[in-house]
Image (tube, rainbow, N blue to C red; front, side, top):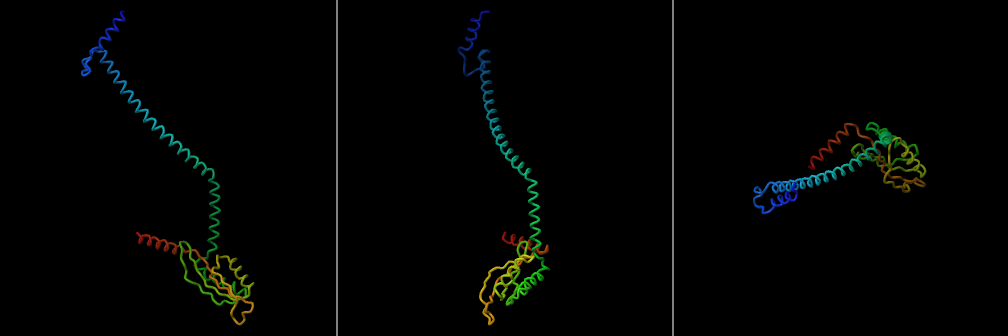
Length: 221
C-alpha cells in the first residue's frame, strides 16, 4: 500500500475548495466539514446542559440547607413536646385558678357585701361606699367602687390587708390618707380609695362584646 500516495491524494482534495459552495467539495472535505459542525453543535449543547445542571445543583444544595434547618427545628420541637405539654397543663391550671378568683355576675352583690363587712369588722365607719359604672372589656368586666372610711391607723391597715386576702380579686387604687376632720377625730384617720373588683363575662355577654367589636371594625372599613 502506497501510504504517501494516499495522503497526497487526500491532501489534493482540500486544495482549491469553493467556500461558497461546500456541496461541490470532494467527499473527504465535505465529511470533515460535517464532522466539525457536528462537533461544534455537540460542544455547545454540552456546555449549555452543564450550565443548566450547575444551576439545578446549586438550587438543590440551597433546598438541602433549608430542609436541614426545618428538620432541626422540628426535631427540637419533637424532643421538647412533652415539656411543652406539661407547661400547657400548668398554664391551664393557673388560668382556671384565676378564673375562680373572678366572681360571676350573680356573685357581685355578695362580693360587695364582703368588702363592706371587712370594714365593719375592723370597727371602721363608712362615710362613702358607692359602686361606679361597670367597664366591660373583652373577657371581663371591671367595677370601680368609691370608698371612704374613718378609723384608727391599725384598723385601716388591717382593713386593707383583709381586702387583699379576699377569695376574689379586689384592688385598692388612688389611696389617700389624712387625719379625720370630725369632732372625734383625735387619733383617727380617713382613707379614701377606689376599690376595683373584676368579674368574668357570661357567655351571652362575651358574644355581645364580640358582635360589637365586629360591628366597629365594619364601620371603620
